[in-house]
Length: 94
Image 1 (cartoon, rainbow, N blue to C red):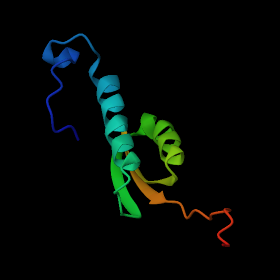
Image 2: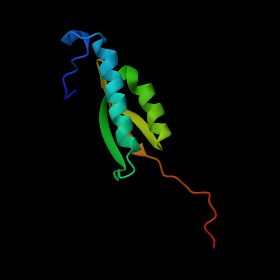
Image 3: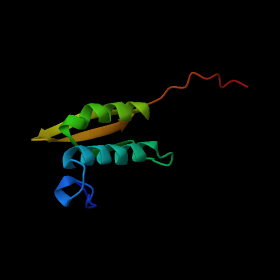
Image 4: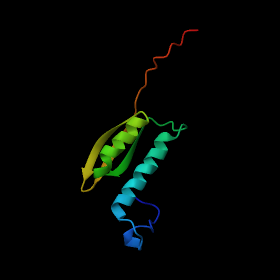
């Protein structure tokens, strides 16, 4: 999943445990994507540590998305994110 080497993790001689660092990094990358006002897609799928799925759900809700776990294998889950339909309660009359 990681495309960049995490040189600050213990496996690379750094001070931070690998799995929590990578889990936090991956949640941050998803949050950045969901916060993008130019994001036009209504659904997409992401891999996530299974232990991070509840956090991913909170992040998704904060940006008007829902999550659904499609598949779990070992410590990984495949998660579908879907943009919620929002109904405006604002008065649009002139």
